[in-house]
Length: 155
Length: 105
Image (cartoon, rainbow over all chains, first blue to last red; front, side, top):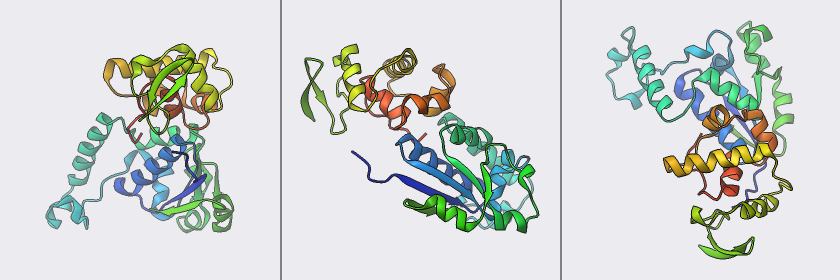
């Protein structure tokens, strides 16, 4: 079918594996349909584009009832790392790239990647903290300018 | 499913214009579909992607993801989007005469 939608801007606000991937898959899927796409990273979502943290994005094992694990077990050291490893292997089998490679794929696909200025200031970061694919640190007003005329999705 | 004439052949297509039977495909059909999706001329680089898609589909039974396309077709992701601005995997599949890719990546 011919899509009416021409642009989508996706906000990634969380820094867990399940907080990051939905936004990435939505953005990549949009580009694959010929839809313009932007990703706006705010709060802990900034970890997904952080130079040293992007490759260490983990599944949240505490306070995550979807995992069907006892809460005490989720807090045991190493459980998050092991579960993350299991999910990463499954994703690789499904041809879903790891976070750093996914960022490259998105940037090469023409998706705009932006960091939220308020969060960057809050966490006392600057542009050197981010992977080179990040096109800029922008204010909420600039985000709306980029998102103008399209849909906005908050994840 | 509807029947239509592409490059002088009667072929069955799905509602989005993808060939239902990959064996109906010819290079002339590829040219005609390409023009329909706004690609006026299929260059060697287009053909490299289209042939890769078709070969993978015929050997594996499914179309490759954009990730695999970028890594293994010999055409990097950035160029894929330059060649097929409205979606490389989808358009290359349609031009290659194979079903629409079903993956989310």
